[in-house]
Amino acid sequence: MPSAYGNMTAGELDEAIASLESEAAELKARGLSLDMARGKPSPEQVALSLPILDVLTSSADLVDEGIDASNYGCPDGLPSARALGANLLGVDPSQVIAAGSSSLELMYSLVSKAFSTGVRGDAPWSEQGPVRFLCPAPGYDRHFAITQHFGIENVPVRMRGDGPDMDEVERLVEGDPSVKGIWCVPKYQNPTGVTFSDEVVRRFVSMRPAARDFRIFWDNAYCVHDLVEPGETVMNVFDALALADVTDRVYEFASTSKVTLPGSGLAWLAASPSDIADVKATLSLERVCPNKIVQLAHVRYLKDVAGITEHMAEQAKVLRPRFDLVERKLSEGLGGLGVATWTHPKGGYFVSFDGPAGSAKAIVALAAQLGVKLTPAGATWPGGVDPDDTNIRIAPTYPSLEDLSAALDVFVVCVRLVSARLARDARG
Ligand SMILES: Cc1ncc(COP(=O)(O)O)c(C=O)c1O
Image (cartoon, rainbow, N blue to C red; front, side):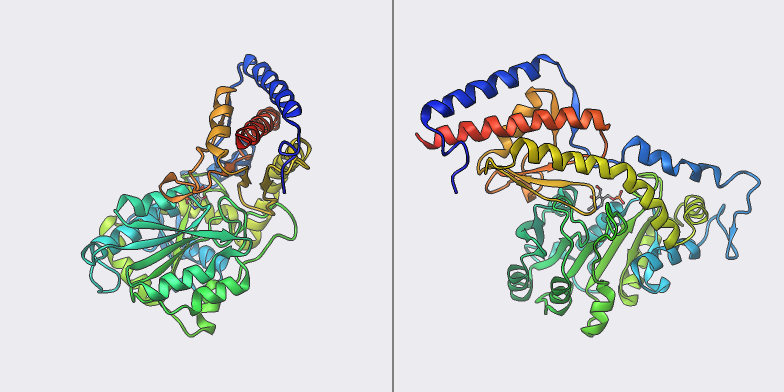
């Protein structure tokens, strides 16, 4: 269907472009410096977690279930920290390692390990010829950067409304032994906000990979990040595996980065008992033990899954107005023009925006000229190459409501102007 700009006469379109250009010039003259690129919690969210710093003092009891958190020991993490992660992910604590403060670091370690020493005794990926990894796109650029770093070929697979295109995933995973893994964010995916359907989870666990050392990197980064009540739920992938009678298939990750203090919290890995043993052997070479003091403070502060849920409900109160503002500004500014679509997530950190084909780079560049920094166009695709140049990740969490409102006004003008110019170019 042609857009509102496509339906205009040549004269009307020229007039619309001239009017948008003068709006853009006015915005530029304001000398704004706003940032809508960062998927970071806002200072108000972080403030909610600062009492963690008061939990442990020099006189606190630092022994947890018989383990002295202030000394070496417990390479798999404090038992209570492992139990918290296990309850959160719905698995047995024996299947969980609590390590470090970054789930991304764990993901990197596992790819690095597979690449240099192999998975469960199979040859290292580096010695198996060309190796490929599937990248649901739009997706998370830092995932794609890890596999790209090791020279692994990132293969894009389209994200759909219920998860990755599973016909394509099955075709590639079952037909090609060089496909060793896939990046997945099963709940409130970054950036689409899509939660994988039960059918998609079932298809993931019942695939028959051509490679024995194929693993799904199931990054459950947004497992407790609901914006509304009730939020969405994703099927427990380990329950699904058990039902399908499959064991060694999934590495699941989660962290408290966007629950408490980013970079100063807990990160968890869950996997089958044999995979956990395999991973432990490597992790135990990397360090003697994780930061158990941070683990202890978190467990004492958050207590249990109910405590996390309560804490996240407070965070949602901070975030919801930001997401509502994005929805309102985009609907008011772009609704009915037929130039763009965007997601309406019930959780997570992003809104995924699609403009006309060939528009995203131009919109991001124009917004930068007008003083608004956006996530680089293409970042949501492996190699930075969005085949249609449509997708832009909007990150509304960090700016204040006032800054976000000003940034969205600029964004809307940029989308309108670029779309109108494209409609004019299309007429030749
Ligand atoms: C999908 C996803 N995974 C992982 C991370 C980073 O997690 P961590 O801080 O635990 O490394 C992010 C941060 O934006 C993310 O969006």
